[in-house]
Length: 71
Image (cartoon, rainbow, N blue to C red; front, side, top):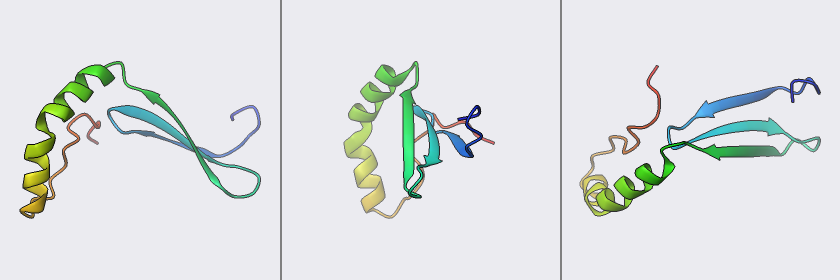
């Protein structure tokens, strides 16, 4: 992308890192790579999914992604 001088955005979601770029038709394309901790994150999310859903249904919209870098 740099060599082609195409603008792009990198976003670290915590569980993966995404690169977003537009194709020649203006469609947004996303490339992702999993975090090195993806397996551990998957285990934790599966274990906490029901509690997270109950919390959200009760109105608590706090994030369940503590893996995303803060800043």
